[in-house]
Image (tube, rainbow, N blue to C red; front, side, top):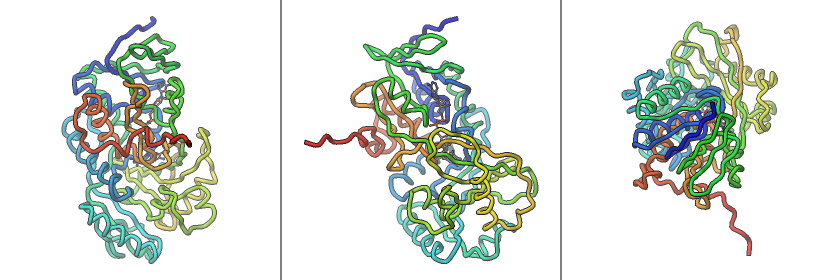
Length: 391
Ligand SMILES: Cc1cc2nc3c(=O)[nH]c(=O)nc-3n(C[C@H](O)[C@H](O)[C@H](O)COP(=O)(O)OP(=O)(O)OC[C@H]3O[C@@H](n4cnc5c(N)ncnc54)[C@H](O)[C@@H]3O)c2cc1C
């Protein structure tokens, strides 16, 4: 049967962004649909960790945006009917050497000055976190407000509630073309949709949606690998990253062996609620090639052994990859496109999309209603990437 459907708001993409937007926009009373080419959470949002963190954010706008998102997520943990394994345990960063430890102390001071709940951890604090840690780790830091969720469940929980507010969901429906006259016309193999407003929440595929309207969206896929550990003795109760993770993420100079640098490897260990653990991380620009690379896996395992040498006999079940939607200045695009009124972009959250989903959904709903936004949105505008033509 061919669909012919008319709506106020059409969201393209059923990842964590599309689901959060669907929730807030439906709740605000809009007639809203979500169009997804596969299933809910079939893109990056099911191929990632589940950290809602400030610990890895640049102090300032980045960390403020994350804090607001953390606060909104606490509300959702109470409001949504489907539990999504929300665990507000805080998270930690560990240091490899004394130079990193000095940098970590500075980092804590800067974050404290910004009003964020960061603490320095010494050698004995680290030992108390996990008996598996190496003896020579000099210390690290913690962010008290960080939390963990299951992103896959979160997407379904948001959609479940959005449907209660009236959302119509169209999965297995790939957007093939969009045109704009008085309203937008969205073509799919299953039929045509018309909408007054369109939200492009297609993650690393957002540029292809943009092309349909001649909008050049500067987002690139930044590939990451994850290994899944079998359920066994608990390694850690909360998420741990190494300080070098910040250097990789923000493309800052880092001292490490050539393979670690080449594959952008830094330790991330996330205990899931069921006590499997997710071991990362890597960062690479290799287009949309999603194959698991054994060289990257080997480098990640070696890096994990630096911090957890006693884990060398642990069983790993499998590995997978996902694509982080990267932008040049490490902030997402959450914006209406000036040249095409009614066309919004909510994409480009790189390694922060789980952390920033709720604030993004809220912002889109507020922008759509011309309400004052919960945080200023200028730093997130699409127009910041428009080149000023030379005279
Ligand atoms: C290894 C790894 C670890 C990560 N860990 C964390 C973490 O701990 N914390 C954190 O905050 N972030 C993390 N991230 C980042 C986070 O996963 C992403 O930022 C987030 O999932 C992006 O969500 P999204 O909704 O924008 O994109 P996606 O989840 O990719 O959703 C986009 C959707 O659009 C759909 N789509 C595309 N084209 C079309 C079309 N033409 N028609 C219809 N639908 C279409 C796709 O099928 C997809 O479902 C991690 C990422 C990776 C790769």
